[in-house]
Length: 102
Image (cartoon, rainbow, N blue to C red; front, side, top):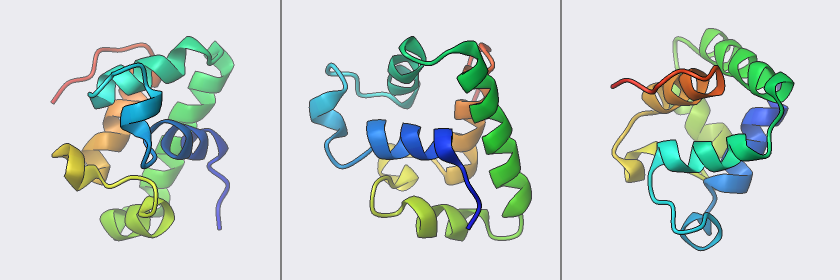
């Protein structure tokens, strides 16, 4: 299994089943990513964006399935009214300091 250390940290640490309790009342994907960014260095954010690219490239034919297999116990994009693809693009965009667009 590939190593997606920073992506794992973001999803398992910030979007887990206790997200509503640990994220300073933040209830949007963008807001929670912003909380992660507060403690992440520029290098970590660049590596996170690179990991998103690698995840997208590695699983392009079965992205939703691969995302659910890896993160399904911690995070379900459907519960946030999005897809794994759109979530990952939001993470990438924000990690690179750009405004998320949908």
